[in-house]
Length: 580
Image 1 (cartoon, rainbow, N blue to C red):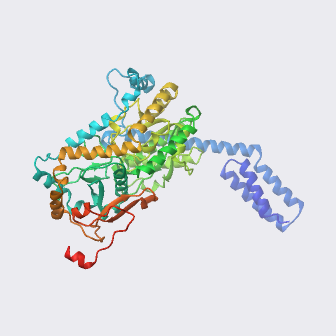
Image 2 (cartoon, rainbow, N blue to C red):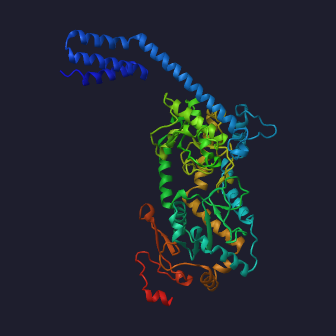
């Protein structure tokens, strides 16, 4: 009765199943619309017979075969463009990797007597290193981690204070008001920070972690200057001449960079991290190793921001190069972008200020976007919970998308019962001294990844050993109590070398130091100079777990502050503030 729109929708669905190209579908619909319009004007059998005959002709075997041929030709050309872009990207990135990409894409030179091709036995040699020991447990321990902690404290480029006056001078420099946004104070087992410190998300997470540690362990008195920038340099005095002891969450170019490594802030509070670990262990037990998908798994972001220098997108280059393997070897790699993925980079190509790595990145990104339309998706909209990563036998960690430093993704991978694969990169975190390639994990890059997978996937015994060793890394280095112990050991090492206790353990000396150098306001102000006592409340949720209250400015009153957090601190009147 209404032959127009309903029949058109039926034809669209039918042709969508039979015609394999958008061109054929569009041609069929245009003809169908024409004959349907004739049928409305002249409702007779002839018009309908012509419309149906035309439809039958358009989806005839000959037309379908032509559509498939056109699709095959388009697929081949698109795949060829993708392969060419990938070869160009590797040729640009690889030779100058140490110069342009800080070595992140460079293949490690094999040691004397080792084969360069991983398939020829190099990987098996590294995996078999722990067989010299009776138990691989000996290789996953805190000893190397704590040794590097002590070395980094002793190697920090500032003279060790020998007298109480020199200690006081060092602490006075660390109390400079310019460091209010980077300083944490630990006194009498409690944590203090200026209000401005809590305004940045990473630093607030640091404060939350340290406050949760202080709830579990009695921390010694110390001043801590925290830097979330992995590229350095460390904090300095106001004149910029003397570096000050600084805590860092990663070192972009290796251990030699100044700074004391501490856990990254994305673990959050110890109780939250404990629940995350429990969920991942439950998922590990729910997915037997033999039943897991035998592919390399990764999900994350690949994004370039216009106007940034080349070195600000190093992680994006690495991520896209590895994701391209999902096109070349779809049965081996499930490496895909989930958010902030491969936007239109075409308008940036040809920019005179764009460096060669960026040009290669743009070209590969555009080719990857095109090839993703042909059912080889580098981009996916499906989100996967971290605990469900245990469905894959191999889990991959790639550098952060900005500077190519650490990625919070790695925090969780050690608890999944899977083989952990790390991208070859010079950056380090606090527990890396206890890792060994071929024992706790396997290192790879875009050039070696296929060969590494081929060798590893053929050795089921090596897979089990690596998965077990990865679990030991989580249990012995990243568990909630492990993080608490490392934080306390960090404060102990700082106090031992820089002799903080000579001043901070003396209430009179501490009061004199703070009165002279701690510039703070008794109330919250625009400059964030109010000094706050921080308390971690596990009964709350999210950011509300980190509670704060005015700590006053004089240290003896800080130490004598109300101990119960169930009673809100009373506000002072203006007269009391003036007398103070």
